[in-house]
Length: 375
Ligand SMILES: *Cc1c(COP(=O)(O)O)cnc(C)c1O
Image (cartoon, rainbow, N blue to C red):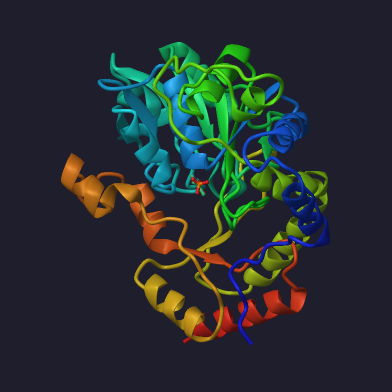
């Protein structure tokens, strides 16, 4: 019996809402998206949300909304999904990696000062696995150097730290509704922010820089539209929003289910020698997105293969991205450029983890892991 790495929790509520949407006239960006944006912003206690097609799009448009482009530099972590860095490259700006804290895997605020140049415009922290970065320290540093902050909060919808939630002390925060994220529409994303003008810029850029969205153009008598800037095609559609809407009231109950399962895993994993877990910062509300263990780098790939062979779904979040071919070739990175991120990248294994995983399945994963690690 296989244990999947991830299983979504979509059910009758979501099916009903999508059918309701399909029975209506409007499939693209319309009233469902508007309602989703309002409710998502309400959940995060922020005034503005713009629905998009992905977190990659959210990061890209956040950078553009801040006016970042060719010749600029943006500081980020190499221990992330490639989209954090490719979004920077898409604007013409240059990602500047700094190493991570070896105990948490999070971007280390202490390393910012030495990476700042006169071209640096922003920092993109990544709340890895659901563990929020020290946003107080980051916003102090950002203010000191006059930098914007864009949060890659793809793992951290529910998380917080020192009472701060995503989007509350940054310029913009970006979310993903990709197939394996905590709430999902298969593909999807959103930006949240506190500044109306910033939200309006993202809204304009998500749909070709056209002054009126399809729903505005269609309602009432025919109106000509204009294109006032060069934009992209990143608008969330009503079908995606219909899938997401019924999940919003369930965010906290699903978070509680994941917390129970996370604690259960932690308790069982303690007995296996050679397994480390990322250390949790103080006053952190974990988002519980990924259950990640760190093993001996020399054994990691064998353990991965063996887990897979025994029917346990696994993932690697992430190998340090500066050592991927494209970044090596373009920027000349070599092993040793960011040793902490590299070491974690060679150690990390994500285990099956989601709101509906059965405790017996966790028992099975742990006992298989115990067998593998004891040889
Ligand atoms: C999933 C993910 C992304 C990309 O999200 P998409 O919606 O697939 O574009 C970006 N950053 C992190 C940390 C992610 O986990």
